[in-house]
Amino acid sequence: GNSVTQMEGPVTLSEEAFLTINCTYTATGYPSLFWYVQYPGEGLQLLLKATKADDKGSNKGFEATYRKETTSFHLEKGSVQVSDSAVYFCALILSNTGNQFYFGTGTSLTVIP
Amino acid sequence: KAGVTQTPRYLIKTRGQQVTLSCSPISGHRSVSWYQQTPGQGLQFLFEYFSETQRNKGNFPGRFSGRQFSNSRSEMNVSTLELGDSALYLCASSLVPGNYGYTFGSGTRLTVV
Image 1 (cartoon, rainbow over the protein chains, first blue to last red):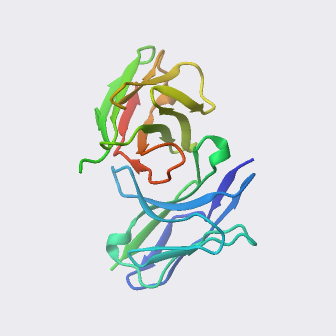
Image 2: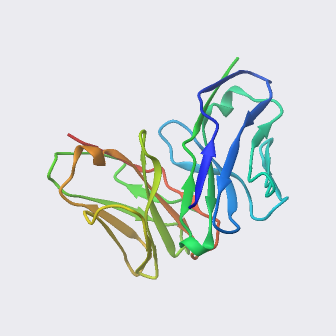
């Protein structure tokens, strides 16, 4: 089946620290991969995406590379800010499953000054 | 341009009642998907609509239903509410199915008491 496994949280970092949130996937085909961010009381905001192997998605200092050989899409940021505190969701979508997202369980990040 | 609008933002219902949630997609978007978010189960796909037709359905009981109107607005209905239906219900819209430019709304927080 199709699924996404995300690093368990919560994660607490000091401002300017390096962030990695691990994400691996299982898919019956060639998925597109996404990172979404959710701030308290809000919906999901697209952070970045990659649609094929070796693509790198990047946005607001975050980046993730689609690694087909390791079925991974780890999220990284070189220097986190307090404003990055949120819950991060890794997700995949496959056109042959009717375009539904399969989400990971989410990783809560808190950045302290 | 306006984003995805979900109404109401908050709702409290009693067990056994029914509820209708509304989603207005971004202008020009014709595909609407619904997701349920709970602390225990995470984000789960409910259904997807395009051109007033349900194209895909997740693994939810028949108490969960939806529809899409000719102006692409969508509603979902939950009948005979159970305590476990308490969740954040998120709607996402895209131009057409398979176009991965999905935009999520802020959600409707349903509490069943």
